[in-house]
Length: 273
Image (tube, rainbow, N blue to C red; front, side):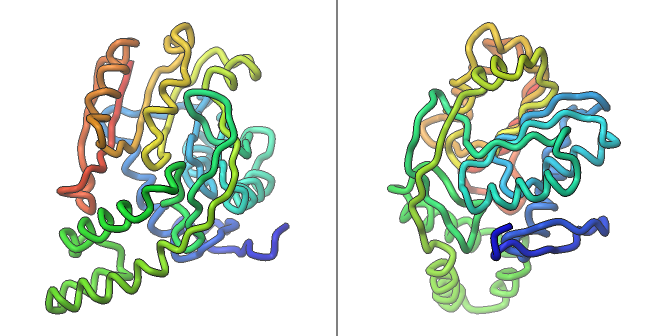
């Protein structure tokens, strides 16, 4: 096991492996946002966790389904995947299948932007890191009362100090490493593992959500019963994804925004067949 992997305790008292302990409470809280607007889990379900990070969503689903669930979890960044793999091995390697790849519109190998000091921000668009930093700064400053505790205290300072301190924090956060990662498609996984139904497709992939959905071949759409996705609404992606889902029979769709992201381009989408 790599030396950087440590252990931390979740709010439910369970000990898991982690990469950055301070990220765990934020990710654990975010999980709760996925199960709203009619999204349901049942024992025996098959779940795709696309953008699994260290596996908090995967583990939460596993426990909610009383350990009777089949999960396919995908994480392309090697350092993050090592932790995901360690968690799957600790709890149930038969039910928790993990893959060292991302999902996209086609199989290929590309460079990812890996943020070792903010792993959930890692993405397939390394050339946009400067723009991402500015967007994050604006969003945090606009929503300080709902921001993570590590920066929430800034709201008591004058605006010029808020901006100055946040800039310094973001210098650390946005230290970037380019890593080569493998991508596959949803339909390839469906074919390779003879999957007859996906009860929930969860997508959290930092601007690659449309790419993931375009990797689903027309005959496979009917196998997908529910979708929950974080969408970065650049180039009208919320509308494009909504239309794509409706075209393939997922007609009950809700789009909303978490308090921390108010006024940004980040939305959550919930779709049911």
